Length: 206
Ligand code: ADP
Image (tube, rainbow, N blue to C red; front, side):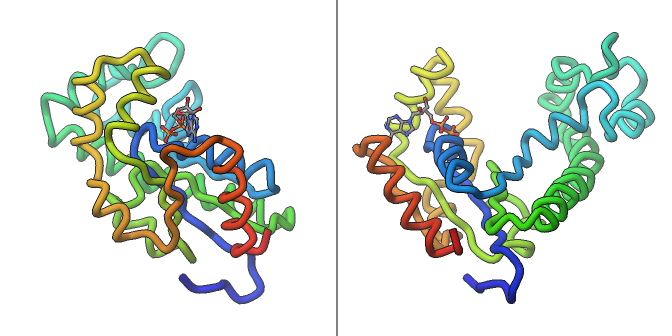
């Protein structure tokens, strides 16, 4: 973890599904951090008018754009699921554009004098791009059983489906190994979590 010279801290925030990452991001936003959401940026790129759409139409065919002008997510999901090559081709289009869009958001936040930039990146540990851009990585961690119980309550998904998502993400161990700071979010109230987030944010100039 390296304090940036003069500039605001750029901190990566990650965690497995149901770890409490979004909850922590909201708490950091309440404290004045600027949250830059990589997943949201990716969704915007494939929404009507999104920057990724011309390349998607060219590479996959116009049938992958739906009547609203957005990427046909259902169709793309089916293709990407059955053909790893298609998934890689989509990622090669999306990833550089996500990097560009989030960098623009970061520049705007810096220009606005925000003291802390938090990059909310679900797949930070899986990525080769992100770690190089960040001053520190914060991991929200909890046991898998807690992830499962939370997501079952939040999304009404079956246990097996959630276990599948967890298995497809980086392991808890890999995530913890990449962390400069760990917020252990199990068996504590939202108020206690907020106190821990406040203490952590103070280390990053908030
Ligand atoms: P993620 O973004 O990591 O998938 P969320 O932040 O959405 O996870 O949290 C998953 C669910 O668990 C949400 O409904 C959230 O309110 C709840 N939750 C997270 N942490 C706590 C906690 N410490 N106490 C109570 N509920 C929590």
